[in-house]
Image (cartoon, rainbow, N blue to C red):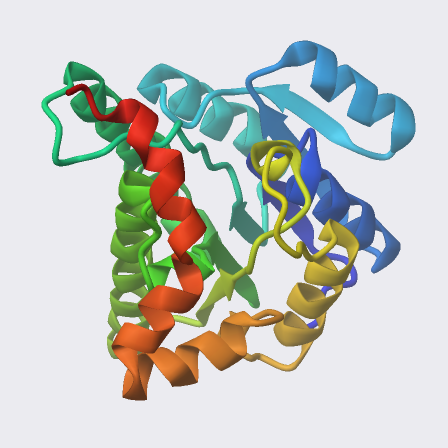
Length: 259
């Protein structure tokens, strides 16, 4: 797929992976619109990258999504929808009664899964009308193997991964030219992972892999150690689970257990 000359909409584009994606898409000759919930961060992103178009919008909010679609349509539409926005919540032991477990799950599912479907539904006809267009969904290494510290996050990304595969197939069946990419990052150095001490990929490296994959029409893009874990999980699922969940993680869950 050719990126030059395309207009890209990136959700969650004011920081982390989203902001780095905006930077690299601009460098490839694309026009870029970013969204986010934090107006200050959006304004800071605009100062760093003046070519950006910024729109304050929350993917969890249906009215925001409709307003975003109207604004993007007024600006001339998009060729690539990059569903990058995502949230995670603190670890809780699911085996212990806690009302917060459901609240966390609803919040993560609304943003990480339903938010993607909401925007895809709004923009799909626009994308189908373009000569060459794409949807990019960011899932996770945890869509392959769940993490004890991120149970509902893992579940949302697994749901999104299955949805992405079926969306791609559905578009193939109706002979649509819309391409559907799935990006599976490993742990990436962002605000969400700031407290983690394990090895992290930089956003710069991840986005380089993403853009190379898009150019090659590589629809499933496994970055870093996600490639190896994919193979291990298929043949040695218990080993894969232990690699994602080393014994030290078990200690981190103990504070959530009330005896």
